[in-house]
Image (cartoon, rainbow, N blue to C red; front, side, top):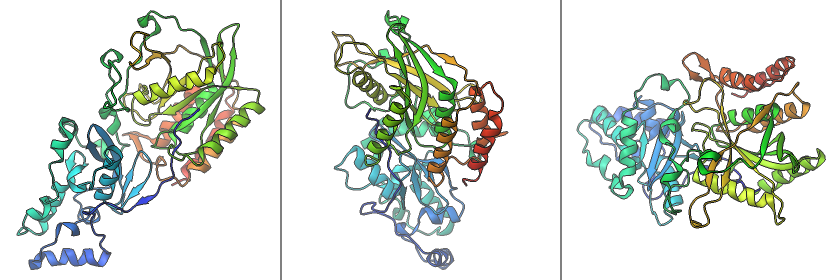
Length: 454
């Protein structure tokens, strides 16, 4: 199964022609001391590091955003003034480097990123913070020094950026300064399948789609599903470790006589979603593990770390591909289960992750160019008696894999005013607890390892 495997983080320095200059600590000190003597700083001299040191902006997860041609990119502002793109964990030295990289992904002909005009900090363009700095430290400065790179990006982007900006302005500051970012909670609004119509290449592939019920499309669920609680526990643990999307596979058995799909094991992919080099090796290892345990590949899972656990258009297409591939060329029917886990979505009920099993029904024959129809799958969850050594081993391997990752969740951060991220993961995993309470001591060992990862 072809899930796009992740890439290792890298520092990206190329930001196009208008990339900012990096200042040394001494230069920044000279910069501030010169302010009172009438010297004028060029716009390139005002870096994010300067704004951070003078308290005009603060580091934080998900505080930076780019909205370009209908696409949204989210970034973390680091203590040293660099930017970490949440999607891949890549590090960028400046707003221009990040904006240029993201815009070229959407429009390869794009020559520059107009970073300070395109990147927003908490909903406001960075160029406005640059203006504020000059007003404060160089009141006599010519404001054209700040605005010369502020090309009319909004006109190119249409209403998307304006609407997103308005949405951000309505967000009240406060507790979110000490909690994990809620950015995705408000940005990814699901749409109804009935509003999609014919497949459109211009539509954002990350658009989330509400699930239909089988009954709503005059169908019966063509198979039954039973999922082991240990599968949920390992999958939920994996999804809690990182702010990036993760993916894994599901092993189990398909009984053609009873039409029952039993999911017995989760196999986390310890790789990144764009790392095409390591993906085949990881997948081959999982195939061998399946074979050794006498299991078949019966599905896959992935996470939406801070958004609703609903499939995107891209997920719908991936699920349809997996269903066709798993069924193979024979005429027999074998289902492929898709599961989405949403660990850090603030719209979840309580502390538990939302876990959504789904399947895709092909579009009607008379409308072959429509998207597949995502439907909710009814599942029976089977309570395991104890935590197996296989599951514990996988958990420790995941801890080792993410230990030095730039997108590792900071477990000492606050999930809500009275609960840390560590409390959050413990609370969610307790929902899948084995009957044998001895498991809690084992998990405490795992949690102690997590607390050392900072």
